[in-house]
Image (cartoon, rainbow, N blue to C red):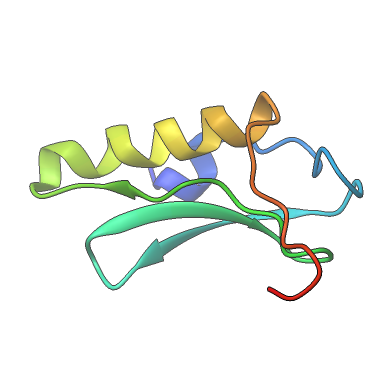
Length: 74
């Protein structure tokens, strides 16, 4: 099963927008709000076996509201 189909993302904890799970150049995962730009920390992976676990961690942080919101001057 594809990782994008397996993980469910809640709405953004700040604005209620949709979250997007993104793989950054084959080394980490983040979740970013498509409306306000809030995002999780990056979860690095080094092996294919760690790739899915890193995606799960990013999705979990997003779903419990542990995100960084860009502020004025960012």
